[in-house]
Amino acid sequence: MKTKAIIFDVDGTLADTEEAHRLSFNKAFKENNLDWNWDVALYDKLLKVTGGKERIKHYVADYVPDFKKPVDFDGFVKHLHEVKTAHYTAMLREGGIPLRPNIKRLITEAKQAGMKLAISTTTSLDNVVTLLQQGLGADSEALFDVIGYGDLVQHKKPAPDIYFWVLERLGLDAAECIAMEDSENGLRSSLAAGLKTFITINHYTSKQDFSGASAVLDDLSDLESFYQVAGLDFSEDAVSA
Image 1 (cartoon, helix red, strand yellow):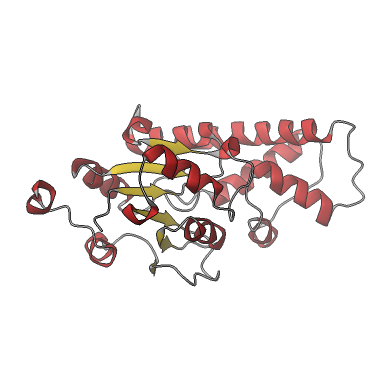
Image 2 (cartoon, one colour):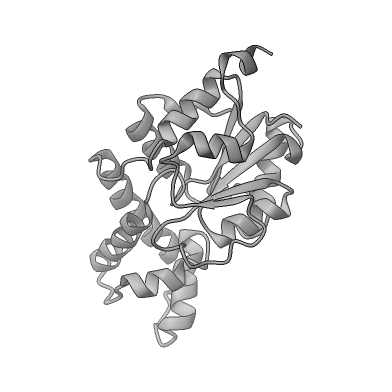
């Protein structure tokens, strides 16, 4: 069946964002007079929990159980996450987080070939839009037919909910789409939704279990090889056929 759409994860897939997220969390903690510090080794473990607010709650429960929770703990976590997001988007606007190799070219060529493009992520819409605008230019979010993000669904990855949400709005069957992911949680999510999935690893995900992926790549530096393995043909003859 001909592929009609590519669905992209964001963090770690479109750009190596995780280190910027980690640093932004630590800035938010410091600003709120918390002596918490997420180093690289700890953040590697915390990434098994998807969603920033969920990650903070998991950290409190498992790593600082003696922390005296405010009466409005959910509000406290939401505020922390908002401060963190402000630091992260500021980093993005400063141009400190470039897109991964050939992501821009893949998006451009797929769009020119008439394919639909979508995003399926657990991060916030603000994070998504800022990253796209920095990497692809103003109003580049308009390149995507559907953007599934953050809290739109109740259960985040590895649950398939966000992919089902995106597929419904694309109006396509899973068999007509491919997914681009970087993590085991993302892969479990996309596979559960029935999607053929391609992985581009990064520092935080390189040792994870990618059983079931159609291919596991370091990145898209060799885009022609990816097109071959993914069964994509953007040549003029193929596009006009």
